[in-house]
Amino acid sequence: MTLALCRVIDLPKISDPRGNLTFIEGGRQIPFDIQRVYYLYDVPGGAERGGHAHKGLTQLIVAMSGSFDVVLDDGGRRQRFHLNRSYQGLLVCPMIWRELDNFSSGSVCMVLASNLYDEEDYYRNYDDFMHAVKQR
Image 1 (tube, rainbow, N blue to C red):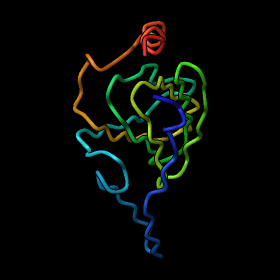
Image 2 (cartoon, helix red, strand yellow; image 1 turned 90 degrees about the vertical axis):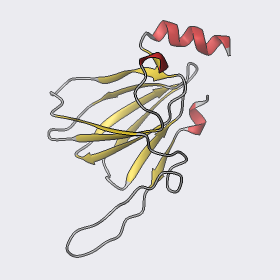
Image 3 (tube, helix red, strand yellow; image 1 turned 180 degrees about the horizontal axis):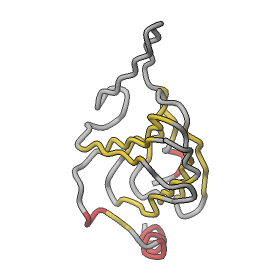
Image 4 (cartoon, helix red, strand yellow; image 1 turned 180 degrees about the vertical axis):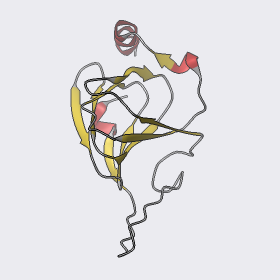
């Protein structure tokens, strides 16, 4: 895959004086059916998360609270995205290395995934990822 396919998606935002509402429906706002949801929270200052790529999994990463950065790498180019709006999500395609850092205090990162957890879908070593990219 190429980094050009990864992008920030604006999600529906229904404004109300009592509080805003945003929703995500698999196959509508995002190009996949949601098979798994997980979230990161209480990330210590200076900590990094991610540090892997997926062979076939697509994800949408949302800053539900606070902010953090996502660095994406397709093996030829790197791009940093700053996420700080709960009505925006970063679409991350398969075969993209991702690293998350710069977490603000109290931030919550929610991830919607196209597949159930499968350890065989991961590249956890950057050199292995680069080897696979070059084989494509």
